[in-house]
Length: 408
Picture (spheres, rainbow, N blue to C red):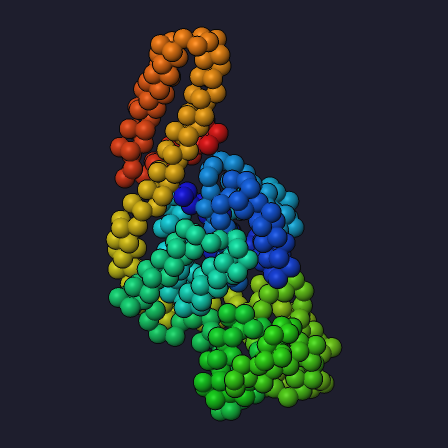
């Protein structure tokens, strides 16, 4: 298996990320397009990872260059943006670099808030969703399982998760504002929204969760008060604060929804933003967006940054153990396909030659032996070189070139 990652991260592209953030409709388009390609094109498996600050495709591929071309096109179509936008903003990781990137992402080392814990659930959910949709069923799911193991090792062995420097905990604190038993509405039942609701409940808040999901409306989780999202204006009459923690392509909360003179705290964790900026001009309304949440936790991150060196060592040690397996998974199938292709060509040409020599058994045997020797000698050197590079960083590039040259 060759691993390719196409990544667009807010910390790398800044405000331009908003055009590439994945909402529900974009994720649906992207997964639908991937379903058409997995197993038919250069993709063998695929996982879509979407967070408030990260849009990524993880792909098990057979041909590197073709896979990158197709993935850029698919991501542009899923996002509904021109292809040049994706080409400009996306970073491509391949082979060992892709594996290292996934391990760092899962451990929270690539997050805007270093060491934040929400990413673990998001990585786990991305893998589970790919399995349900049959976008990933084999080696790629094992890679994600291993990434979660490495992330757990990093968190248990270092101070990377020190303190409460996470979007969830800070958002919960801002929503409560020190009030005991405050009433809080939470919009969203994904990984982020569910975690916010859980933390608020644990801290004594009276939580109302708003969602469109029929499964949750029909069977609310124990301890949850659940309402349909269309009831948000009514819920706003009852709560002290509301946390927006869902994917959206438009404003969910507008000034017309608030009762006159209503004081309410709004914590907006959406990307794109879920609260109309005009709300900030209303008396008694305070809006805190994701940027402000991130800013408030920066001061808590010194110990986490100090732990990065220890975390790096754990990641590299894990890579040293796992890359051999990843490379064997790339090398052996590629060599097998190379020999199979050579054998099919040999058989086809041999049949053509045998028709010319008729029933001369000695001539037929000589042609058979000659064709076998030619294939063996021609493939011996490239196969030996590839095996010598099994532990080298350039193996992935060599395999990709081989697959392209021989159309494997």
